[in-house]
Length: 128
Picture 1 (tube, rainbow, N blue to C red):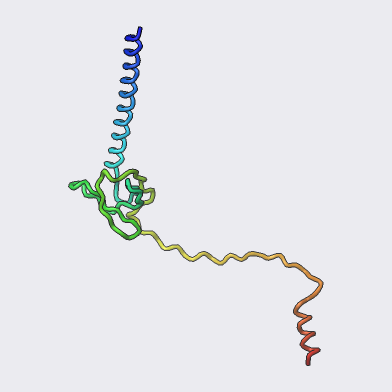
Picture 2: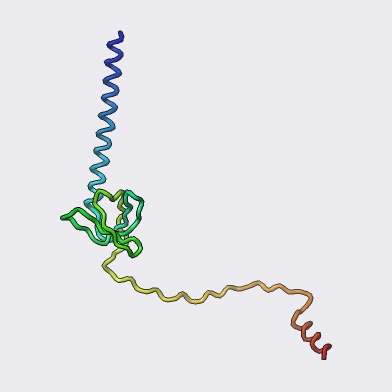
């Protein structure tokens, strides 16, 4: 009875290992496809959590040049963790936006019993 239990336990453990191995292989394939589809202008995050924009891709050396707020850094393809495709077209120049027209907000006026402008004029007259 002990041999049957250990045999079933061994099969379950081997089945679980095979399941997780195929799952990680699938994730590796998806990551490789993501790296192969990477283009200039895509936003990327490295394994060191550095965020930047792809400025150049060297397919011979398998490296990527990333622009991080004006600083160009070179990374291996394997150092890229995530790729966020660029949603805007980089080939068209960005037009400078005109300054927005001034927005006039209407204020509610509150009426008080004492008019401050008249009282200051009266005080000036009494002083003279």
